[in-house]
Image 1 (tube, rainbow, N blue to C red):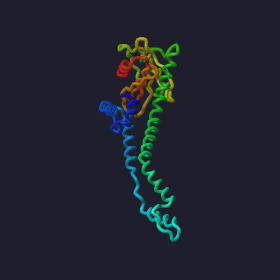
Image 2 (tube, rainbow, N blue to C red):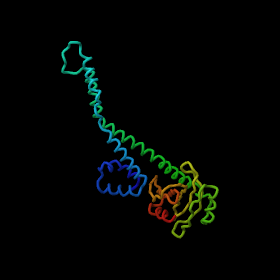
Image 3 (cartoon, rainbow, N blue to C red):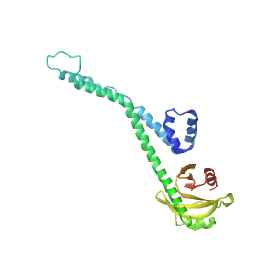
Image 4 (cartoon, rainbow, N blue to C red):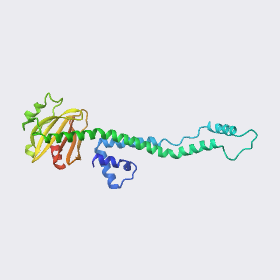
Length: 258
């Protein structure tokens, strides 16, 4: 299950309103995806906090204040009226309305917080997807998608030295059908990144690499954008984004080999 689909189903999942098959698939996804698991935990915490906000007890000082208001509203010597004055009726009606609106307000607050969280979570990822896709399409429009054209890993790896602040892993995978064409530099996510360029049959594959210090190992996650397949994963402190018009299975094979 993709993270986007998992987030769509998160609310009915937490409300225990999902059908059993979807619920089991989403539960399995949450066990392997730290980002979605953290989102589910945050939603549960927000729900517990809101459910703990119940109706407040009437303060002891309210009754004497109401009696004084009633006494002040009656003319001197007037008989007690069975009907409270208009000002008191408005006060009581407002309190009743607030009590009835409390669950709706709590639900609105939960929705607003969840929406804010999803937007904050999705915005950086959407920016990376856009940058990777745009960089790949720009490269395809050039005469060559590489700045240094070589299949020699001992030539490519030193070429990155001094051009980026990390050392990407460069592998010769021609024996597995992924021919190394060379490398280039690009700009993704407001930083300079390294790009390894492979070819499989007539398909060009760009593999964007940049450091992710402290980033936990994350298995490949597939995305489809404008006819291109994107696969992103994190390994050994590096983030990888591979993009091509190949199908998903072939990109996953490349992920295993790199």
